[in-house]
Length: 68
Image (cartoon, rainbow, N blue to C red; front, top):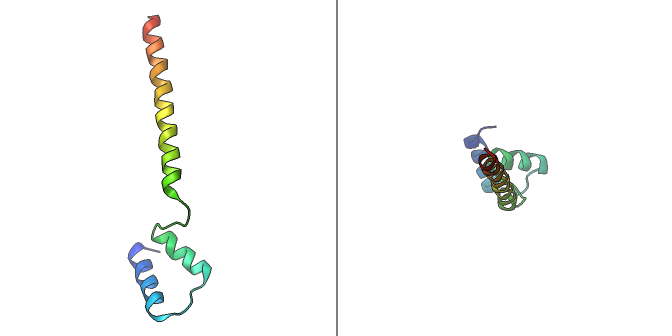
């Protein structure tokens, strides 16, 4: 489902329906890139891990440079 289509379906559900099925709501939220989980914490964890890996690579390169 495309973003615009999902937005229209969700807006219609909000305006005209009193209920919406959970599977349909999940599909709409997924199409709109909206999650119920805290994505910020996942992104922060990912970025911290990337920084850690870059520091490891930098130290490794510095050691190789000192040996030569």
